[in-house]
Image 1 (tube, helix red, strand yellow):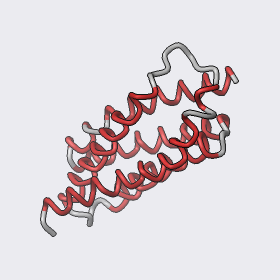
Image 2 (cartoon, one colour):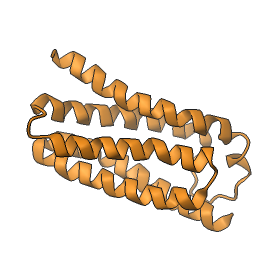
Image 3 (cartoon, helix red, strand yellow):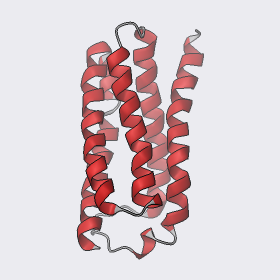
Length: 154
């Protein structure tokens, strides 16, 4: 398969996961989320969209770098990547769709661990593939603390 096609497919897979999550997020931002007590470090609502679009693009680039090395030796790393991507989407369903901040907190801890495992396993295949995910785990770390404080404050 052409390298450009692999890159586009990889990015689109990740952006599709984000789009699915945004269905649950968008409808709750102006109604439920706006009325929650939030910690002082909560980013402004307008920042979330551009950050997530960027992070999903970086995830796609990371997946592409691993895919481009060949999937024969990357089945487990790509499976872990798929798990973290699924957990990412499910978090939006739990937090925004079900409005269950405790279940979302438990779930995001599993997601964080899956992201870390993805970084480690991808790094072993292509260092760039692991490094490009560092902003993602950094943002999810902030989101984890935000989720925790939203749970505690509400």
